[in-house]
Image 1 (cartoon, rainbow, N blue to C red):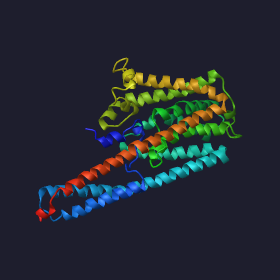
Image 2: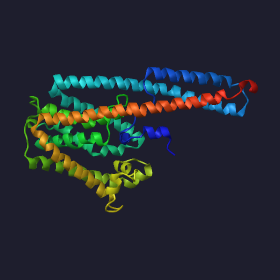
Image 3: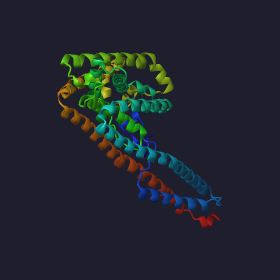
Image 4: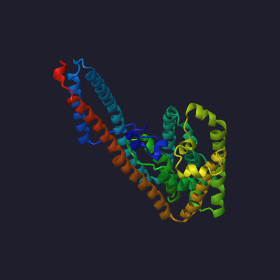
Length: 361
């Protein structure tokens, strides 16, 4: 049975990880929670000498709650550090993008490698490591190869542009990526979907001599052909690994994949459309839907090659969406989880007050 708190904590971006702390960083509320904990602790001390069975069970329950709360302080302090570092990272990125735009692609490449390595460690522990085979990582790999190793390669430039301005940016609202600064997982998800587009924009509209192809505008046929080839290479690799080699292993090891995640909600549109050809062909339908979506984004974003303003509109729309989703997360989920914890403490306090301690002595 799913608890009310678990329901409040769930969103579509859970596949990219949730924040580890569920207590909001509001000093007034934090002091209020500390005060309630202290009250419960005082009454728990009074119960220590009681031999009443009900009192003993209640005392144990209170002590578990107190231990859980106190152990979460370390987690909350870690989240505060991540929050501050997240703000500093945004300031640092704005500085590079505004003052040294031609260095931004280098920063993006190094930062992406570091963040993905950290994510791999965490995802491996959570049995989510097959998510690292998803298309967004392939798209980031394509762009890193272009910026760092093959700066004059036309195929990599065109594909990087199509991937970053198309599927990656549009994945932001689809997966509801949110700029929740205390969560390294959520900010990493925003980074790998948003910064590739910023890097391409920085290289294309500044006098960056290292990437001469960035200043060219390919033909419509070329723009579609190269990205589709690289996309099909990824699709083939992904299909073989996920559905042919590792499918049974994932079931046995309880490893989660994007396909498995989307099938959990049997009332979703995705579940219905992916089963239109029957259960056996559901993986094929899954890949087909993904391919159609990607091809559609390639077509739409080709227009942005002719307009710097349109590119900025696409990037800032995705960026504002991450801010909006973060606001919803903090206001609707974080704060409600906090209120649930206060309600639990109130219930325990009322139970304590209902016990006549004097009669137990």
